[in-house]
Length: 124
Image 1 (cartoon, helix red, strand yellow):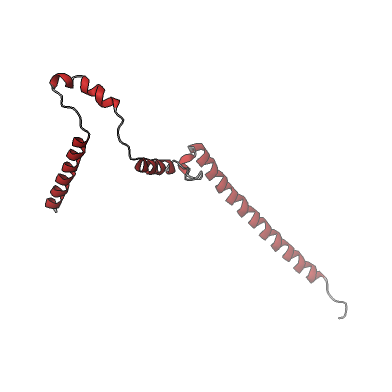
Image 2 (cartoon, one colour; image 1 turned 60 degrees about the horizontal axis):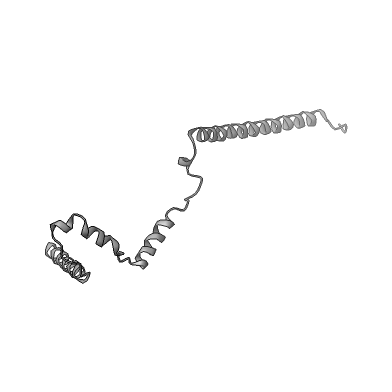
């Protein structure tokens, strides 16, 4: 496996060397390396693969979309605390209302039974 990687790296290196030779850059010595070559190299525009650049740009733009607003990390601590408090007290209010209705139903049933007991038929 390592030999295959080495062979692939050597092939890539040779390809890069051939591309560098294709650019036909002039030879330079140490005196030119200080400034002359840098100015000459910056004057030429680099080759850009526009299809690849468009794909990369589209990929990065797509990740900037919002994932939604209900994420708790997008809420402050106070908002989270307030929401939890409201939820807890809403449940308590529903439980109290349920107990009140059940109590009223038992009272109504007890009144009906008392009323039925008081109504004795006159046939006897």
